[in-house]
Image (cartoon, rainbow, N blue to C red; front, side):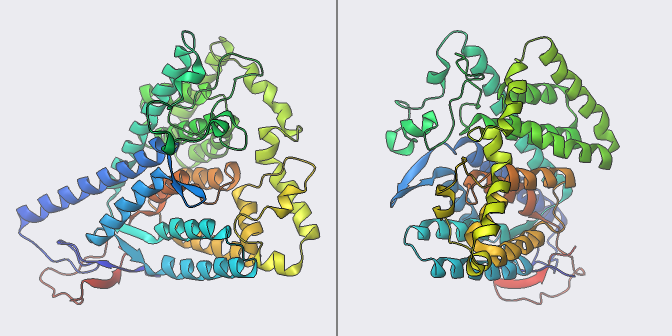
Length: 449
């Protein structure tokens, strides 16, 4: 089945018809285009990773600066003809948006409008694509690896600096950036907001590394885990693997480890060349733990969190299933079908345990079973024929559905767009000298390759 697309015409290809330029001009133009696309990908990834702790006041809430920056890039790229919209993704998106709109109207509360608007805007980005080569996508992965390496180096330096200065002061941007773009002190302490500051063990003076710019140490561990997986699959550079593994362990979080437990066996099964680097990082990690360089008790003591109804392990991995069981037992048929609207908290507020749904439960609770089904179909259309390696795609989906609870978490979604859906297959080329079939600046064509 062909992937029909719409978009604007660039100077080389009209999405399905190859307009040949002189050889020296065409090669140079394509080279510049691919380099430009890689730089755009790196800029989007940098905004998602380094701007996620900053926000702008927006009505009665805050708008993440990473989304503002990314939105400007996407608008410029589409207006200049470098991006197009895939028809199959767009159709599923429109049907999903209708279901989300119905959920809002049936449970209308003005406070839902901001979440609903961001939901529509963020997931529309998944419909955007551009033709790219395997080498170009590999350059994007290299860019992600470089950014992940910087964050891990910062995490290592941050942890070592705590031996000299107060670790809590290292990650406070107050006095450096304007106060209005920074989170509140309460959020910084984890009271109703991000758990940016957390001791490695209760009462410890050492805090977990978050790479300075990431909202939580768990986010640091997630980025390091994704970096390790990409390195094992694609590049296998020892120095990168060592630094990324250190960054993962110094975050003292189980989420990144759970990502690797899910994805590394898949990587080893589908790619034999991944077996040796996967074994080496495992031995390196065990060596650090055995030598006492990494406090193993900080990990072993958290095993009991799955039974503690207020601990993060229970909240992240157990609570959503308890909530789902309670919800399906008590919800009315209209609620099950159409949901309770984005941001609805009535069901969550009455639980005797610390209730926090993962993304997979939240999409059911907010938009109902109908919305969840259409949501699944939309993502299936977006990920079909993705250039993203299958183990990495599985890790990103697991991270999004299980370890995260925010359906409109801008940094995570921007990262998924760049790594999974933005870089599409090359367009099918016509014969040399074949006249254009699409004179309009907005064209239809096949991205099937």
